[in-house]
Length: 300
Ligand SMILES: Nc1ncnc2c1ncn2[C@@H]1O[C@H](COP(=O)(O)OP(=O)(O)OP(=O)(O)O)[C@@H](O)[C@H]1O
Ligand SMILES: [Mg+2]
Image 1 (cartoon, rainbow, N blue to C red):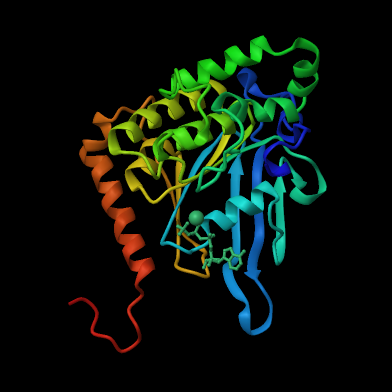
Image 2 (image 1 turned 30 degrees about the vertical axis):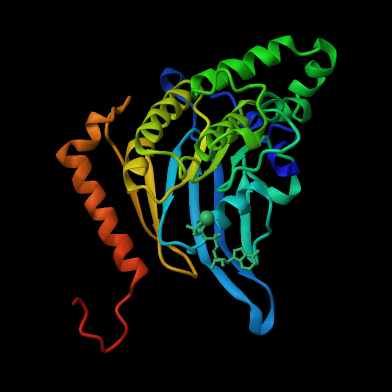
């Protein structure tokens, strides 16, 4: 398991400065994540791959952002930058106002491919961040962890995995693994949640159920969420803002607010305003995937 999944200081918790002199108890807006002219090139010389053009992105604390765009445009790269798993080639990545590489973070990340440890049961896989991340780590040692087991079981039940706590990853389907992966990203109540196509391998109905679960969790706990998805309906259902990226090397082409009231329902996704948003996003991505070569007639 990567240390970036379970670093032990809560920078974002620390960034929640009490408001002074603000009307009606309003908090001044904190920035959870900021990319300042960040670019990424993998490799060197003739083999180098420019993955991300200089990119700016500011995410207020507690916001929910979806990143969408063609395959290979740098979406996962952005999440890995924010998690501190890779370093920018140029520019600065700030999380909770500090450079990512400079300070430990309490981040939850669900990777594109579930990364559960095959020799641990689902319960133990999901519990892992509690063994590593403070303040849970100290309690875990002192309490012999019955309350943690209850916490894990409650979360597994919420995503429909009751009864699978003592199974091993190889005994679960791909969709079940993704749900367990999501539980592991959430169990230590991170202030920053990085989700890389967390529902990609699920059937449509299960996916929609989990959208509702995630929306509920977000409304209660208000973590800052960066969600990468290819599903535009998912982006419109869950996010407050949708950033559309260009083909590689990626950049953010459009940054759209999504203002549908919450809690959103699956029925809302069939309403005209939602369908129109979907169509607009789709057209942007089609254009971003296949820019017409100079001199071409375009179209068929
Ligand atoms: N470690 C690496 N070394 C070399 N190239 C890499 C590396 N990681 C990513 N890339 C390249 O950088 C580009 C962006 O990759 P990234 O994984 O961010 O794409 P993505 O938008 O998440 O795509 P997908 O939607 O298919 O998951 C790709 O062209 C990929 O081949
Ligand atoms: Mg990806």
